[in-house]
Image (tube, rainbow, N blue to C red; front, side):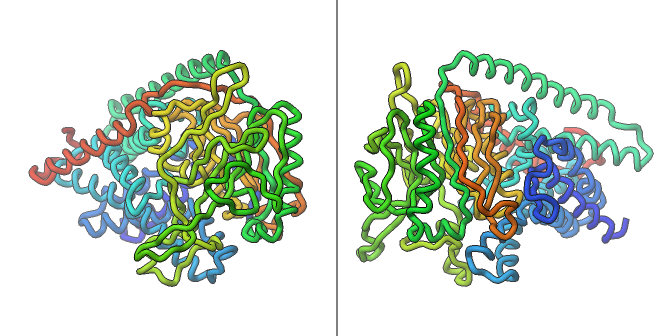
Length: 553
């Protein structure tokens, strides 16, 4: 093949794989195109064109170019929507937002390139089949992307199966990394079969059979796990949870101090209604309260922004906080944090949690010294600080005992290790107050929802997810959505079908499950073993001689 055709094959992998993720494209539809996840099986073959191209790369430079091209195509197709926040709310011109997006995409694609180039080199040196090492190197680099430069693990290949419950259950044992390894392993087997067909060799029936058996075993185990969790859910005590979605666009939220009455007018009546209908917990989205408050506030009695006294329900309020601290050099100044407060019906504060993992370019600007032209897209009056440590909030349970909540504010929920850390406190359920209005009518809110669904499976806990303008959802411990999820809107008044869409409330019962899954008990053991195997294979390749391609270890 010519170099151009090889490059075309590599690039083809990107959009094919991206179609397996949740997608919403405003030119086609303002809603998710494939909510049932019927395109998720594409993930099991989307890497094949790229692997075929790499098989024909004679030198490292060529292999690196192909691997990087595939990664760039995938992440541009997956996270194109990130630039919307920069242009709509950060004031960046389109060309500069594209540059910033390209830096992020390049960072993410570099991890794809690292995994593929390392496995290409192992294959060239040792002749091992892709399936013996690429799943492990892939997991190792996905794991690295979870932490490098504070981490941005969006669009891990494991999330391509979030809407296929029998496969998603694997996350309860291995985390999302095990699903990514399964996806890559199937691609390796199919690529070997296509390569054999092109070369006129017999199909690798043993490899194909073993891979099919592995997928069947995962699906069978997932079905058994689903049945087990559903039985536990049926027997578990339940909590009536209400999510209030005010449905305001981000430009208004950024000026929330100028619209206190209007914002509360979209939150308070539905909160009172939920209390009247028997909700045990009413959860507001991230920073929904329109004024900033001191972090040590004892009771939410603020005359300028009054909250209702409730009869029964506890209220989880997202609010910005500020306090005076001494900065480096002893200079005093204000610092802010993104918090949630758990309030009793009389508005007494039972506990507070501050966001643990801040959003790059949203709540802080990484590498600000080297990127002076990029500023935060969020209007801020004070530097943001993260909250530490993780904190479980609790209140008396209906019928006795206590309800234990593990709050993960917005960005917190994309990091599986936060889920594992919370498991030590054995919460009843997870809560993910968020604001996805930044991303307009795009794939972003739906992809984020898929990630939170995977957190539910990993922990074996239900998730209450109130969003400022969608997607608000009650998520079962199986990762499935309870009926009635509230859609995105109206995040962009110029596109919204109904810019005056009213606020909405979702009320439902969630099971309170205690206990641990294998994943929350052992954490990223699977990812660590994959990294160790990848390192061992690389060590053997460093010392070994190249053998005939197609051999086995």
